[in-house]
Image (cartoon, rainbow, N blue to C red):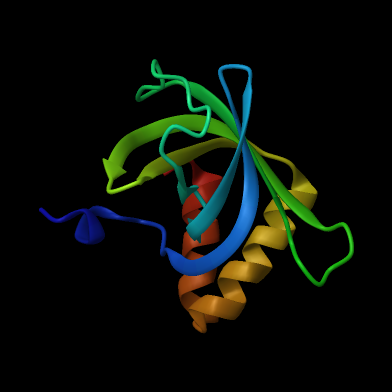
Length: 131
């Protein structure tokens, strides 16, 4: 089964700089896409990423939303995968905890980019039910 078919939460394309905290390191990265349950990030290979970064390792993402003053999405989670493609590291992050303000901003971002309020409502219901 392909990952897109298994995916319960829609990804929306999103490009914005962010900061990833991982193993005591702060890494400048770029968010490539977002969902209610995580993000896909890229950062330059060799940009301070610990060589021991591995699946399941705890991390924290902070994404300041441009054009909104100081609004930000912050989430705690874990590394789902790390791949080097060319000179870039692609890092999949799975969200485990997010505060109310951040989920409100994230929900609005997904809603605006998804364009389907019904699908977003189903995803929010799945998120709150623990699916």
